[in-house]
Amino acid sequence: MITHDHVLALSALLFCAGAVGALLRRNLIVVLMCIELMFAAVVVALVGFDRMWAARAVADSVPMEGRVFAMIGIAVVAAQLAVGLAILVSLVRNRDSMDIEDARLLRW
Amino acid sequence: MSAEVLLFDVLAALAVFSAAAMVIVARTAVAAATALLACLTAVSGILVLIGGELVGVVHLIVHGGAVTVLLLMIVLLVGAEGGRRPASRVRDTAFKLLGCGAAVGIALVVVHTAPGTGVPVSGVESGATIGPGAASAAATALHPAAALHPAAALHPAAALHPAAALHPAAALDTISGGHRAMGLALFRSHLLPLQVLSLLLLSAVVGSVALAGRRAD
Figure: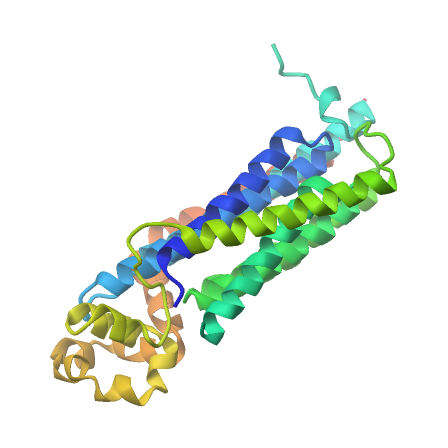
């Protein structure tokens, strides 16, 4: 039996892997991929919470908010990645480097 | 250990291993994107397994398919090498693979020893675990496999509950795996967020074209 704790622990582990990668990796595009990984962990947690509430709800009201939120989040992250990749392309075009150390335009 | 738990374990191990491989092992962006694809596919399988069928399929199409291809096309455009990491040696790779395996081991230990509520997410036996009452009726009615399970049809609480039989979304939810109820929720009660979302997507596309299409002076 898969319990809610399994799902939540898996989500936390995936999120930690993504966060470590986003903080440690030097390649800009890999950092974007790690952000994507963190979001996948969030979707797993949202669907897990949705199922938890569905198991506790009364039979005539089916809660859908968790899954609807996950769907909307999927679209929002797709839009965010499109803009992020456009910024990356223009950054690489101007700086000619994918290293995150060279993207210091807004750093103090 | 039922087949469902076994499948969850395999998919979770695959997801954590490929996530760790993406973060630790992958030297090039192409290798990282491949590991990300494996991880997102496993995550979609887990989403389908725990009951978010439509979310899992959409996640696979949008993120496993479109976004990964977009990332690979950007790698193709701007060049694969980035960062100034030194070239890795064979012993380094062995240590990294060991690290990935250790991550999977830690994941399995953490997932299986996690304390807490013990609320079942899905599973046919979930109805019997919670016990009689409205909650178990909801749990069996929500699970798509419950429609095929003879015990669900014979469950006294589900049969005696008039609202479950009369509510069209709840009744069809057991047949179609929740897609109809999901569509009703998206296009009826959450119509305004959906429209705002389409506006956001449009502005994101226009913005990214304006950003990436600009000529460097």
